[in-house]
Image (tube, rainbow, N blue to C red; front, top):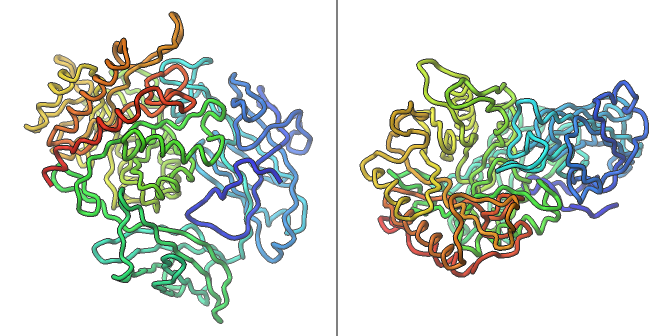
Length: 597
């Protein structure tokens, strides 16, 4: 079996038995989307691809960056006989965009959305010991309004839009489960009461079953709670943290508890089991500050788009995910805005372990089809559907300290309610309903539409530190800079209401001394002429924002170059461009809001 991306893909809900299906699959591009008519569900395909890398990527072995209207995958695998008596579930980490899955010619799953996982139950067509032929069709009409993130709707890369991703781009795998089995829990830390609150859903629940959760520190069980499964649709468990073992998750000490989850029958025998983990930490708003565990923490964030030269949206190795966090922290950042992409879940696992702060975001770009003076959003219920799937997957990760479902929505306020108003409010309310314990930003930059948004922000790419400072003087009087509000123009955003405020994009300073005249190489504003000029500008911009007593954080654009957008702290291949020690030193100065307590 191939070892390509062979690490367990769902690190916060781990079962002992599983089978990785990454590696070589049959593959065929279907430009006319005629595969059904041509019998591709039941016939061999013309070529081969390396899963989980998309066909646009070099690592896939294909490297076709043209528009791919539909693609097909095929692989035959034998379900392990050792799984006898259990159902085999087939899991896909992410398939872009509309996926249909057949097993032995029978449709077993369909899913819309390029960023979130889905599963199929193979027990309706095959049992352990049987061979099963898996066929996947992915349709990806990039020129139709739909959430694309930063994938280019034009043939070539341009500006801040990049090479597309079609089809499978995260791990494909199988696992066995009993008829009645655990599903992914929702784990909520409660620092004030020294406990974790678990919502544990059960598939095929029976009144005779019980759920047992054990809290583990260093291999030692420190608390156990057991509940019957007949008390509700999901079983609720309060897992106490003994005072002697109380340890908060923080940037300085990202301590994680292990959790053992077990489903028991009436005699106490274990029917199903999974391992999880959690971090005990609180997030609170106190005036203009966001406090983590009661402490004001200035969020020194970096914009991370999660692209790779050879894997595109897929990290070549698990170590590459970990390394991106390490190089960010080496440069002095304590977290990231995960930008226009729902990242592989293993990135969050490494962030949990590193004490790295994360803002989760949906890849919503792709439905803005007109200018700011039109009702320009062509969105459907799929936005909320896909975003809820992302929230469900990522809710329990302690590294996530905020959500931002939308980015840079552009539309001026009208005398009527628009689609953008509906979409922004729907995404905000869906996020708050699913997760009431984290702050939510209605949209990052430009068209703020939700009065009760927990935080407020602006994007400001002023390059001169003096101009950057002048732009934010008014925040002290409750009059912050707001995008799209030039004199004489109808504003894009509703009025600011005194929420915690940050500059969620700034900098973007271009630097590529190797670029030749005519090369596609850009950043924001005029590029510096020397390295010293770059460092002076970066240090000046950081000092302005760190020194503003009303700001709780900032986000620098960006961690790495991405194709033609060459304004990263690191090159696209992750080699450093600057004196990393000097970058880190510029950010290590205490922030004004931290000094205020």
